[in-house]
Amino acid sequence: MLMNHLLIPKELRPIADKIEARQRISEADALDLYRSSDLNALGIMASAVREQKNGNYATYIHNRYINYSNICVLSCQFCAFAAKKRDAHAFEHAIDEIIGAVREALRVGVTEVHMVGGLHPTLKKDWYLELLRGIRALDPDLHIKAFTAIEVRHLARRVFCMSIRDMLETLREAGLGSMTG
Image (cartoon, rainbow, N blue to C red; front, side, top):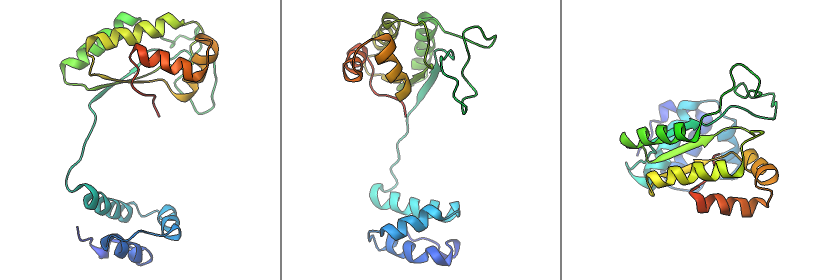
């Protein structure tokens, strides 16, 4: 793909030339791109690299995002979502509700379910395993992506009472395909 150099600022044109010539950019070039606020120019160059590598081929995931709960023991400053169990806006979906939502999503062609729910203070190990097994039973090919890194740490330490590695293996055996993030 030939880039329209008129849309690329002069200071980035040498990098655009390297991209068109399929040459590797330097660390200094990468820093210049990082510091640039010209999203159009960055997009044009990124699209050129993508087209060089993959042609006009693109992929996407059709997923269903599910928050099984918003109850969390933390109070992170950046989170506007979490609630304490006593808060009026707190919620916790039953496994049957979640499985119903996944069943509906499968009817419209979803290939991945993405679930998070905070650091819940009272959900037990069996709840998480039953959830994953129930979803897996709906469709063995459905990819289950669940739990943030902090949720995984919380689950390993407070709920499963085992190492992160062992807990992730247990979750994988129950149906987990990957973590979020």
